[in-house]
Image 1 (cartoon, rainbow, N blue to C red):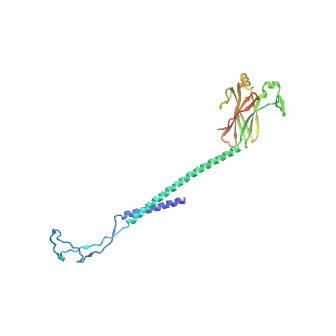
Image 2: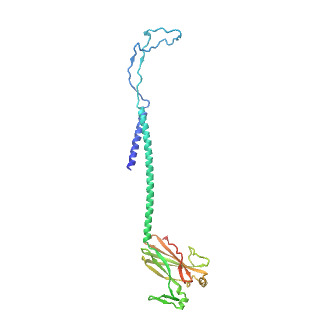
Length: 319
């Protein structure tokens, strides 16, 4: 601001000097001071004479006769006019002032250009700082927020050739033949784990069953499934904790979405059973957004269990 103030003051002074010089130059135009000179009579010996008979034609062959002093009229000789003018000084002042004005104008343009450049650089730096600050905040949120992981785990386990289920008092209890025939050994439960550093508020989940033909290798992105089970699940899950959802039980064959023909096709590898869905939750940093984490599992007849496939990426949506 100090440099700009000095340039503006200098510009005002130069403009004032140029204006004053122009006004005085215009005022002095056409005015000349003439000094008073004394008028003196020329002596007879130095007088310039004029003849009253100037109209008489001159003769080249004869010399005019001398004239008497009474015929000579006295002539007043005036000294040369002395002109005292300051116009040249004013013109020079005007030229110098104009040059200085042009120089100051270029300096002002240069200063304005530097100001614009510095302002642009400062704006770019501020934008970059804001972006860096936003990235830092985002990184902090990601490091502190809740991250929910969905797993589909079998209820029963096979020890050797014996299928066992969890015993009520702890440990394992073997399954009977009727239970195996009913397909209880193929039941699965959904397990949710919070891997973040802050609590997660679970809102709802959805489970779908899809049957893919032998030639289909990927589940369509927007596929809902032949049977869809959607449930509300209002639960707060602390950081590092897990919860196993007991209802609904994910049953490979005993579900309303699989027919007898489809079950046979799955066992003969002519179709593939896919269990997929999503879980929606919020973390402490989400105000008007809901996080959605997906899961996708396919049934393997050889291992007789569900195996995780490419898990859909988590997404968020506005409430």
